[in-house]
Length: 217
Image (cartoon, rainbow, N blue to C red; front, side, top):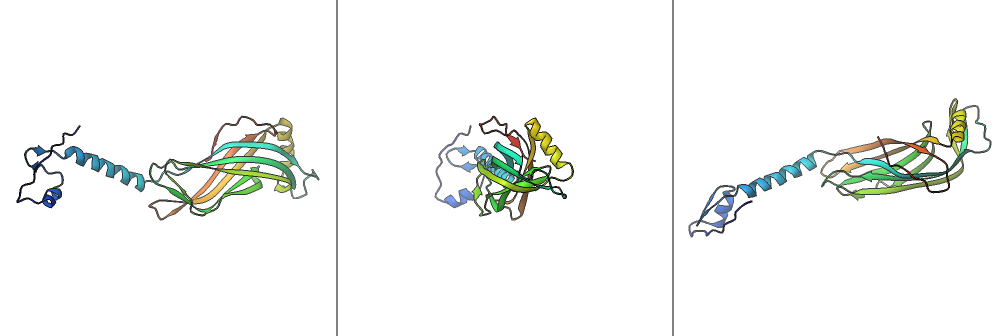
């Protein structure tokens, strides 16, 4: 705790002179230590400098995901080049969290999500435009991706159709959500890319199902 004492300024000592003395002892009726006030000010400055000098990357997570359906569309047999068509009904919620304490972050390019099977995209959506919308410190913004298609092309590749059939029979699809974009952190000029993938294990179901949050890396 700091003891604060009031002092009188002598006629030959201007208030400006006292202010310029910084943390020196002020000679008045009593000697007033400024150490506590200076220490608090220096601590605050150090915290702010550290906060704005070092960037904590934004964190991307999948907070919710449902797969209403996923099946090979007619004709169910892939072409000679391994290309097939799938019918799907999917909904995903992607969260973007700014983990910095004070520094805001803005989107400088569209935030895009792709849903993939065996590394090949069959659903794609723009989650947010690159309109420099700010996400303030310690805040989270959730974006939704919902898509339905009766015939979306997908390159299954060698053995892809057999793997698709195996996972469909097991009732669980091993999918991957890829999220890409670009952000700029407040007080920093360089833009930084977002390129993460989120592994998803989804079972086709029309009823709401429990979902454990997935961290994207």
